[in-house]
Image 1: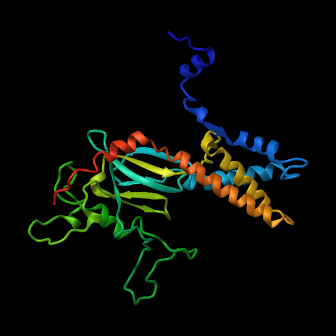
Image 2 (image 1 turned 90 degrees about the horizontal axis):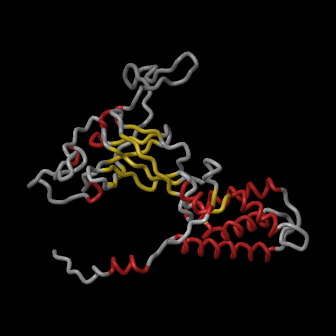
Image 3 (image 1 turned 30 degrees about the horizontal axis):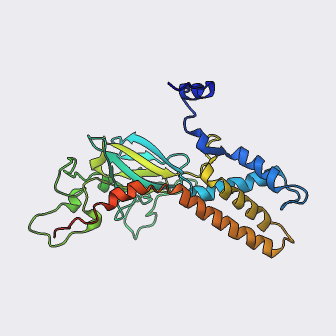
Length: 297
């Protein structure tokens, strides 16, 4: 039996830090950049560490949006209010799913035909003075919730079962014998949601009440120090992004140097995307084995 070293024993015995070897902290990248790129007879003769830190954080943000694996997830049980607050470090969502009784994640789809508009308190009719209420300070008084949201969450769809043969709510029920076409956007029973960006809330359809929902979203990787790290596949891309940002913002820098660094940044970012795409030949081969199956109409 192979012996386990003290380092391995400490790693496997710890409750945290598993898998951390594949990442490099942002602090180490900044320090390495100062050593490699800054100094006499180097690309950058002199620069403050504060400037490098700023460009490094911006590079990490930009790479997090479309290159790095920066998808985070948050699981909640949808309350009776059918609302949840957006995560603190939320930038955009990847997908929102509900978990069925078998632990399978069912994708929810956005309800593009509804919203949660701002609803001011109203008195009288449209032609009357003081149609919209305002307080003593001149600010407009608002209703607790809009009529649109009240009506949407009041839908009582019967599709809460896994095998229900209808849509998300009664609004889209499939009336057999009365419908000659189907809207693919609504042809699902998983449920719907929409995001109120102004108030930072996710609103769910009534069929999701009490269900377990997972929100997979994109962060900028700067929420905490532990998140400020870069996969080693993209470490070179970070150096090139920082170098290009520093040189491009300097006066009297030769244009050919700026353009060379821009091309190097683009090439390094493309290479990082390919590396992080995690393409496995065996997995692709397994999927392609079904290409010869006949599709019956």
